[in-house]
Length: 214
Length: 214
DNA sequence: AGGTCATGTGACTTCATAGTCATATCGTAC
DNA sequence: GTACGATATGACTATGAAGTCACATGACCT
Image 1 (cartoon, protein in one colour):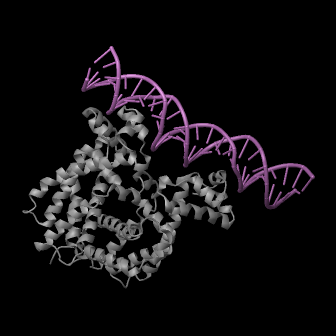
Image 2 (tube, helix red, strand yellow):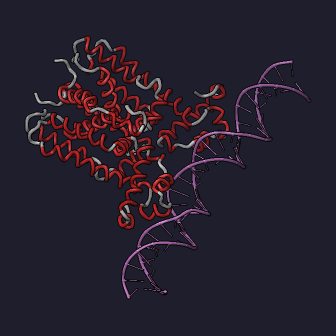
Image 3 (cartoon, chains in turn green, yellow, blue, cyan):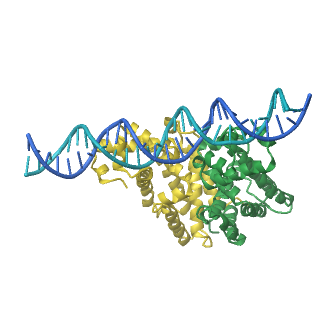
């Protein structure tokens, strides 16, 4: 958590710091990011940084929190439709929301993807609470689906939620990261929703029916 | 690729270098590994190292190649049974082979898992050829499955192969890495095959039938 | 013994990192 | 205006990384 000093800062200075940090973390892997570059970009003194944050990890954790919050907004819309859709339709909406989040916040999306690439050590430290928030979310969804008779009641909820989370990230990662060869910045805006939904629908079909011939 | 000098070295010296490197790469993420530590552990001079390899990347690539070769041996056994098993049984055997490889070569397995955590940049460079060897392998398997009428002919082979590869890694990673909190070395030998196959069978069921209630 | 080529060596250079700290500046209250 | 606490500053320290290079040691042939 940032210090009070940081929160007392004028809005625009806070933003300068966060923007610089987001830029840096979206450009490089965690270990390659540099506080030096961040303070330079933000035009604050090195010493100031250490008055705001205890170090790199502190800063990163905070940014992850911001991303999580922001992403939740995109998901919250869906939850209002929760009752009218079945599990698979809902899952589709979630992918769409994920896509839109990524489109609106390319840098944040890139940072989110980089989480997968952290040491397991660091991943645990950073994801302490929000860790399996995503997994918990899917567990609940799966439970509802089972209750509504949409989903095979024999499945292992936790394990399935885990797999879906993994696939979730894979597909989005594939779409955003593989497609743009390393943050070519503004190219991100050219992406089409339909193009991605082709993959999502294939993925959904796998999750729903499997690949066995009938 | 290592230099001729390296290959001309007496066997035990080559091994000392490779062992030290494998130890280092299995302990730390790529960027955290240190040539200094490797040469110290291998008891060679810094300068010697740079006569054998052009740098860290060169060494790492070579080790990945060794791992790939070694893993192929484990898979080759299966391919003899290729005709007598259906796709899903074959896939199950592949997981088993993966498990056995990991059990016999814990350090190599850990390094293989670390590949997932590389920058996309580096990942591409290192996986140039062997990159989608795994994916190609699954595509062929899927094709055979389709031809034998075991698999839905409507599926996108490439995309499905990609997803299976991802899940493949996820499950094994989950099993080996999450379970042992960061290479506690010899603990790896305590793992039970059955314990892991519980998860594999759940995963196979998802791939086969999906999760929709029937 | 002399010569030559391959190999070995580790101190050194260069670079960039994280983090510190004495000092300066600001801003508000009195 | 002065005093005091909060905030800002960037040169500085400490650390460790990758990679180099002038020289040393070996091994084998003539």
